[in-house]
Image (tube, rainbow, N blue to C red; front, side, top):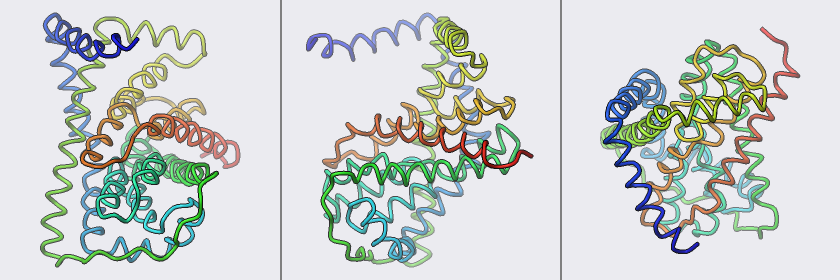
Length: 324
C-alpha cells in the first residue's frame, strides 16, 4: 500500500500526459470552456466582491464590523474572538478568502493552527456574488432562488461551526485586536491587485480541472458514470453530469445545470455543490495555506457535511415557503 501511494502521483502524471497526447483537441476544448465560464460568469460575479472584501479588510473596517460578533461567535464556536473576521469575510468574499484570513491570523499569532484547521471548513465559504449572481440568476434566472441558496449556505456554515465546537475548551473572548488600517488610496491599489491575483488563481484552477473534465468526457467515463447514476437514482441525466462535474470543478458543475428547471432535486444539487466546493476549490484553499502549520485533513469531510446541510436547508425552504 505504501508503494502504491508513493507511485500514484507519477502514474497519474503519466496517464495525464498520454491523455493530452492522444486527445489534444479535447484538452483545448476544456480550456476554451473554462475560459468561457471564467469570463462569462465567474469573474463578473466574483471580482466585485473580492475587491470589496479586501478593501474592507485593508481599511480596518472588517475588524470594526467583526468586533460586534467576536464574543458571540467565539463563545458559540469555542474559538478566539478573532474568528469573526474570517467567518464574515468568507461569507461575503467567497472562496478562498475565509481560508486566507485564517492563515493570516495564524501567521500573526492570533489563532493557533489547531483551531484554524478545525474552523477551516466553517470559514471557507462561497460568497453572495457566486450564489446569487452565477447560480440564482445565471442558472435559474431567479433572484429569489439565489438569495435562498445564499441563506442556506450561510446557515449551514453557522451550523457547522456549532458542530465543530463540540468537545472543545472555552477560549479567551476578548475582542480581537484591530490591525493598523491603510490610507484609502493605498488600500484601494493593494485591494485591486489582490482581487486580480485571486481571480487569476481561481481561473487557473478552473482551467486545470476543466481540462481534466474534458478528457474524462472524451474517454466516455463521464457519460458512463452519469448514465449509471441517473439510472440508479432517478436523477435527471443533466443533473447527474452536473454533480460529477461539480465534484471536480465547481464552475463547470454549475454551468452544466444551466437551463435546468427549478425542481427540488436540482435546487438541492445547486445548494450542495457550492457547499462542498469541488476539488478545484479545495486546491485553491490549499494554495493560500502555504507557509502555515494549518492541516487541511478535515477540509474534505467538513465541506461534504456543509454541502449536505445546505441541501437539507434548501429542501426545507422549498417545503415551507410558497412557490412563485
